[in-house]
Image (cartoon, rainbow, N blue to C red; front, side, top):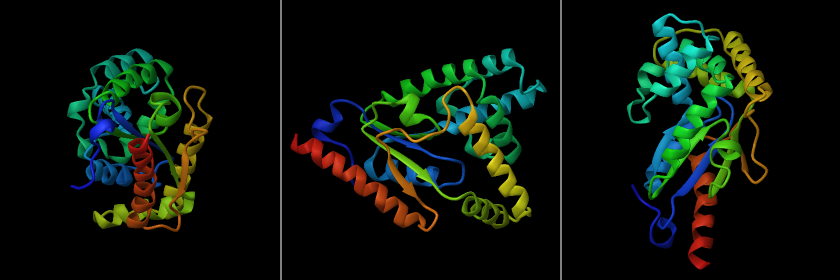
Length: 225
């Protein structure tokens, strides 16, 4: 670990909000930034996956609002099991659960409480800069073409020894994008003051360095204020 938020910047939580569609690389970027700047990390997508996972485990319908609300209230942000929640079926279910306004309100409250932790946090998701943390110190919107994201997803599946069809993955990504962008409550969109990073032609290191430079400039400006 290097970097770190210290001095005057630590008087209040320093928050980095990262938004963008699935497969754009925001999760990897969030982990790298949290490690480098020694900040807490929350993948808010896992909170919705946790709700979906519980609903599926209980055999309830994904559009059962009562079951979804109960599952959302039970989510413990300190006990999110990434491996258990990473299944493709859980991700698909989470995208459907995320359109329920009451579920979003419950989880947003939990996410905001997380963001208040010192010395600060990196949160990634779909509505961090616009809804969860609109006053974040740094807002990044990480995106990539649907085709590039589908190829990345296919590579991940094959790296784990699985098989999948590129066209099916691409169709799935496009459907999820439509749901996220078109939902009435907290739609996926960049905040007006977000820094846009298109990773279509960037590898992980280049994307991280571009994001790190943005954060460094904000911290430097704070230090001179």
